[in-house]
Image (tube, rainbow, N blue to C red; front, side, top):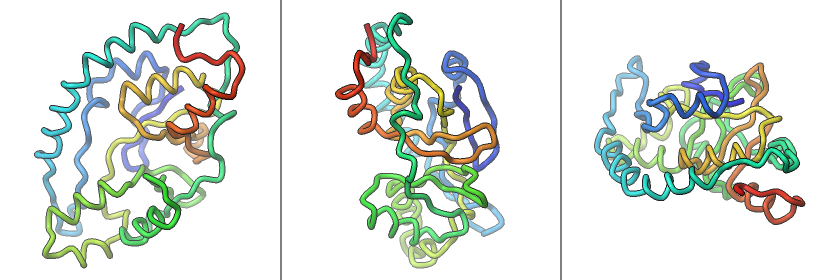
Length: 212
């Protein structure tokens, strides 16, 4: 079961097949400051660049989809078996600078953003932070001291802990996700799964295959 979060609100919760039927999840969301702070930032150029890259990769993705037929005779391994449970997170009331420091200190590519009781809000990474700064570099000092809660973060795809590893791997490849948070039915963050976790699973779990 997969879900799509938009700054803490669930807009979708269903199977992987229904996830592919949604058109908007294949488009990057704008990263902007919320209007009450007086910042409205347009990242349409970044969106166009990402659109171009997606078109280049589409042929390879389509070939993968044809190969990614899951053999139901194989044992099913759940994502909870390989996820990183004690993942580093950042509170949505933290500043952008504090998020950057956590990314750098822990040598991770992205951080789950959580609210009270570890409820998932979104993901933040260095690219998001850089885009915010570069769009208004003269006010960069002010920007980095804004709270994460002041940002409209991109839509976030999550997965529940009993999802099949192979289905999660396919979604990550098709939607170009470097990591995917694992949440329960109450939107509580349980852990995170990265590409590295998937690769380790392929090499260590007996009879696990991503396609047949």
